[in-house]
Structure formats: structure tokens, C-alpha cells
Image 1 (cartoon, rainbow, N blue to C red):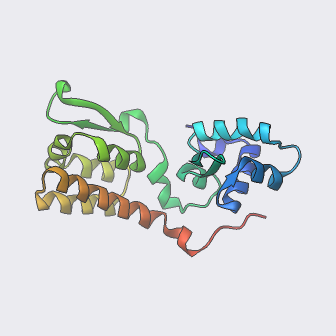
Image 2 (image 1 turned 180 degrees about the vertical axis):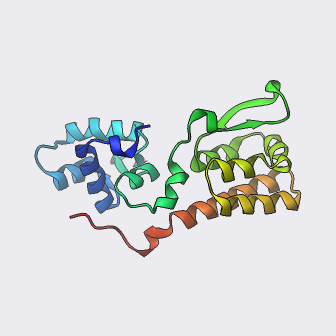
Length: 195
């Protein structure tokens, strides 16, 4: 993933146009941007921006895109604190899901951001969550790597409930989802205007 400062000006222009429209088809975007952008040019641009996780495809017919969390960061639409929801941590700072102590218990699943963690929690073997919660591994990762004290405290509260199985998974998911909504709630109050 590129750092936001490395994104080309023409890419930012495209992202800002989509942000202003909330979602866009290739035809709508070509019309909004005008020359020199054509539908065929935009197809290549949008495919690349999707590969870089700056856009999300929301419809196949007609092909429609919206900004992803990283795209929203790129155009300055997310509050600074929300960046950690979507930005990737270095590989060595990732959360590694285990079901027990030792390399033979590694699930092969890692998370590199809070949004990635949320997605992995949905499908990881629940024994991994049962292993990490009592050891405070998730709590420490959230506090020390993601630097989110508030969420770390909420994870600690989950640990104190001593949940197991799907109730544990669901409580973690609900807690993380709620925190992500808190961090990205700026959208409910209005959009940034670009001049």
C-alpha cells in the first residue's frame, strides 16, 4: 500500500470526484471529470485504485465504485484518529492468530489493521479467540500497536466476561464494529467540500 502522500495528483482528482458523488459509474465519472478522461481510461485507473484498496466495487452492473476507508483518508475525509482503522501496520506488527502456544498452533491468519482484524475475526477458528482473550494478546495489540486505549479497555471488559465460542466472537465483532463507527462517524454530520 502506498502512503497517502505518494498518491498521484490525478488519482486524488478521481477520488475526490467519486467522493463528491458518493458513488460513481464509469460513465458518470467520465462525464463529471470531462477531458481528458474517457471511460476506457477510467477503467484502467479505477481497476488500479481498487487494487490499491482506495476504491470498493459496490455493483457489477453497471460497474459502480465508492471510496474505501483508505480512499477516504486519501481525500482527507476521515478524522485523523480514524486512520488507524484502515492503515496497515508493518508486517512484524501484525496480529498473528494462534490456537495455542507454539508454531504448530499458528492458524496462518494475520491482521494488519483494525478493519482487517474485524474481517479475520469473522472466520478465524473460535479457539484462537478463546486462546488470545485470556492472555490479553488482542488487548495489548490494540493498545500498543494500534494505539487505541479506548478499544483496548473494551476488549479487557470482554475478557472479564469469560465468554467462549460464538458468543465471544460476536462480542468482539460488535465491540470492534462499534469502535469503527465511532472513529468514522464524521460522515453523519456532513461532507467535506473540495474547491
